[in-house]
Length: 178
Image (cartoon, rainbow, N blue to C red):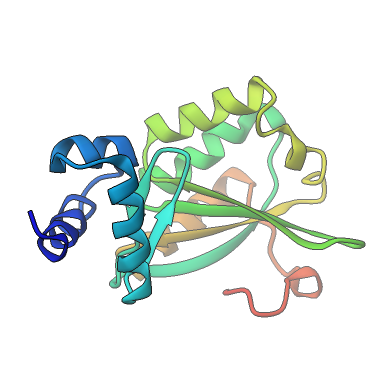
C-alpha cells in the first residue's frame, strides 16, 4: 500500500480510538518504524496527533476546552477524574504552578473510566507519584469536550462536590484557558 494511502488510513483509524504503533502496524501490515515515520509526516502536514502511554490520539478539531482549578483529598482522585469523563470530557493534562520551577505539566488524555482506573493504578504503583506532592495547594486540569454545555456540567459537578477552586486568578498561569 502506498504511503499516502496508509497515512489516510491511520487518520481514519485514529478518529474513534487510541492505538499504539504496534497495533497500527499490525492493522496496516507494515513495520512499527513505518508507522512512526507516517505519524511524523502527518504531524508535519498539520494533523494534531498526540502520543500518550496508551497510544496515538488524533486531536479533534471540533472540541471545546476549559481549564479547571481543583483540589481533592488523595482518596477521591478517581472520583474527581470520573466527574470529567462521565460528562463526556477528556482530561488532557494536569499542571501545577510552582514558585521556583513555574508550570509543571503532565499529559494524561483520560477519556473514560477504564483510562482513569489505569491512571489511578499507576499512581499507586509509584509511576505517577512525582506531581502528587506538588498538588497540595490545588492543581489544574485542561479538559476538552464536544460542547460548552458538557464543560459547564463538569464545572457544576466539580462545584457541588467541593473540588472546584474558584476566584483564584492570581495563581493562573499566563496563557492558560478559563
